[in-house]
Length: 178
Image (cartoon, rainbow, N blue to C red):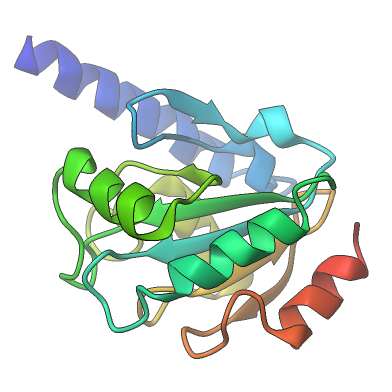
């Protein structure tokens, strides 16, 4: 059974890596597993703006989950999709989705999409972040880096950890594309 899961993971990774080689790739060409283990295909959000944030539950920036939730509530009636990509790439995330859910749901009552833990840098970097690095020469330097993609799936703007998700400059950029 473990061998089968490993094979499925490799197949999934290989398929997504193949997409990243395409010069016309967009964020909508990728997938990941959510915190409940369900496959999230970003192609289902094609034509919609996406805000993707790499997150961690044991980071000094973890209170930004509240700011992300504020943003989610403000733009809930629009077609903006907010996605938290949980990651232990900076050694500040739990390895268990159940532990992460406790932080996200109990402490911050989040309503936006949250991934199972994935790598945003290093040897096992997820294909989404590999593509961002290759296509845009950007990678998160720490937790809570924010990436705003336009309706065509191209990176419009990114912000570092110190910029809160509900800051005026992020909201103005979102307002310009919704």
